[in-house]
Length: 205
Image (tube, rainbow, N blue to C red; front, side, top):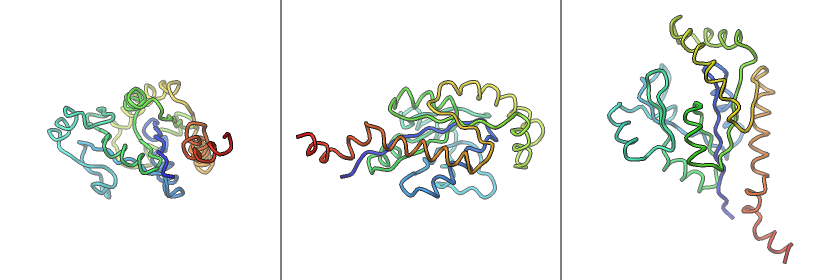
C-alpha cells in the first residue's frame, strides 16, 4: 500500500553544517528527497540549476509568490528563497519523505501551513567553530562573514521553536542523530496506522 511521506524541516545558522548533513542523509536513504528551492541569488561556482536551486529572476519569483505557489518564502541576505508547494506535495503523495532545508522564517510558515511537519534545528558546537567553518568555505569576504555571525545569533535564538535539536560537533554522530529522527517519525502512530491499515483491521477484528 502506498503511504504518504513525511515532511521534515531542517534549519541552522549559516556554517553550522546542515547542508552537508542533509546531503549525506539523502545519499544514505533512497526514500528521502531534498526539496529544491527557488531563489533569486546568483548561482555559485559548481551549482546546477534544478539540482541545487531553481535560479529565477526577482520578477519571476514575485509572480510565483503572488500566485500562492510557495509553501514558504523568505528573504535572506537580500536574496529571496521559496519552496514550491506543488513539488513537495507530489513527492509526499508518492510516499517519499521530503526535507526542506530552510531558515527559521520559512520554518515558521511551513509549521503554520503544514502542522504535521517535523522540525529539526542544527547548532554548531561553539561560536568559534561556526566562524572557523564560515572562513573555511572561502566564499565570503570579512564584511559578509561578520554579518553572518551577527545574523547567526538571531537565527540560533529560534531553536526553541523546533521539535528536535542536534549539535553538529562530530559529523558522523550528528548524521546518525538526524537519521534516528527520520526513522522515529516513520514509526510514529500516525504513519504506521496508515502503513499497516489492513493488518490492524485484521488483528483488531
